[in-house]
Image (tube, rainbow, N blue to C red; front, side, top):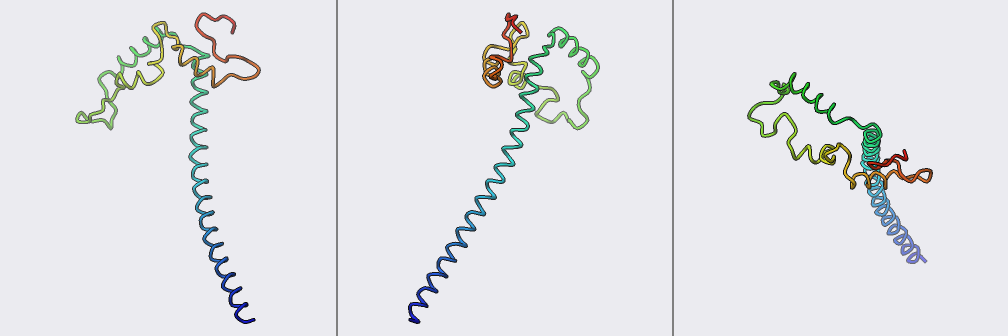
Length: 144
């Protein structure tokens, strides 16, 4: 009888030990999931802001000539002045390079100032809703 009780006590202790180990694993997984949730929610927030900004820019296009005039005004005023924290020995220039411009929105414009078809397809696919087939009109489309 005593040996049975000791055997059961050992089983209980072993199960408690396994339970504590499993609790540690679960807690570790919960912490990892919380970190992932934080990262994903931050990324989602900024991606929504970026998509809203893209949609706004497509809905309210800017005349390229006005943009060029404005850039000339900026360069006329600030052409000889670099940011205060920039030094000549830095490899990065105080203005965007061609690669940076091409990777942004300006790199996705055609000669007439409209977005290239690939960008329109992506935005239409991401923003299509049941109430409307397309959010963004294509060049030459007068339905919107």
